[in-house]
Image 1 (cartoon, rainbow, N blue to C red):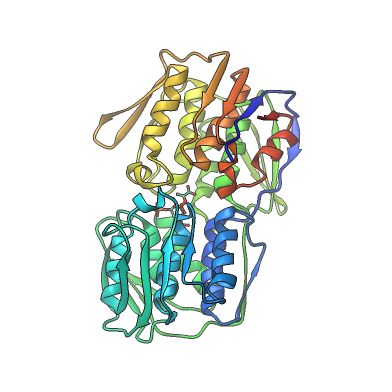
Image 2: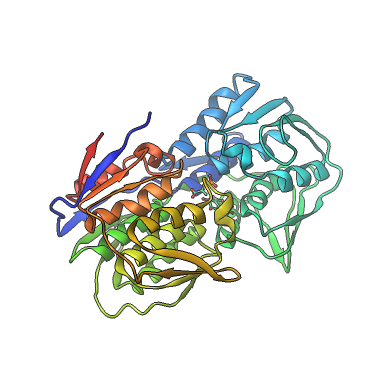
Length: 415
Ligand SMILES: O=C(O)C1=C[C@@H](OP(=O)(O)O)[C@@H](O)[C@H](O)C1
Ligand SMILES: C=C(OP(=O)(O)O)C(=O)O
């Protein structure tokens, strides 16, 4: 389905409540843990994100019905977590995905699982999906050394199965660890299921052990919340209530509260959730590091550009291997409003807004990336006719994004 949506400012409300769906990161971990626990781990508030719906369907229907080929679509976490989960399942299953998924690396995880004793082969190109997970597993060692600088999802995939391995797991993280809060999230959720672990220096150890009877309650998605911060930052004085988000979140993307304070958005934490509103004040451009929260980068880059504030950005190394090359996508789309986003020194990207000019109308290409659509949507508060191409990409993590924009008064015309 290729649909462009015309997004217009409309009459923005001064106050609205938006109920976000559950975190897809927490949900996809929960699905694997529940499956490994043989019914001991229950889940509350599972996300309706397409990536979660897909993983749930694969685990609880297709695999149970002995399907031999499963398709994760564009879901990176589903691809990586299923690879580890299926390595222990005893049956051969091929895992495939979108054309983009076939360009997203998985070799580090496959090598680690092979070292542990799994039999996995590549169906097309070495190091990339689709893969055939044989399912026969005989543990050869519990110690593996895994690079941490490409994707934390490889580490999470291994940690989730750690306690189910007959000899447990001793995972040594080699190189720098990127996206660390996602590893912390995995360990915290394991602990919620009664699994103990030790993290000493570069090594995380998980003994073979049983899951406890437990319930995982999924918090709403902080990455999704980031788009509301951008709406507030670009509005005159809109206040948004986001129920059930917590200050002490398992999600590293809760850092958006701190980042957006620099853009004059104030967060108030209550027992009900959070309220975000304009606090005003000077916006002083500075260098922001996204190594711990890569999924926030697009939101913040686009918001800064729209405000004409020349922030610089680092920690963006992993953006090139996500749903699209997000650096290139940002550069291409921002150029449509006269903004450049260039690597001015190694690893540092600088916004230049000298020639910022909001065109009367602008077409945003989304490159099969939900975050491109959602990061650019708040520009409707600056551009009369903003056309977002392939607008339904948002389904991956935030299916009712457009309905929520309408709820706050932004007009969305489905084309
Ligand atoms: O573990 C997770 O749930 C995720 C980890 C991050 O990926 P990387 O570790 O590849 O940066 C993040 O970008 C992704 O959206 C979700
Ligand atoms: C990178 C993302 O997801 P995944 O890697 O799970 O496809 C994302 O949601 O921004």
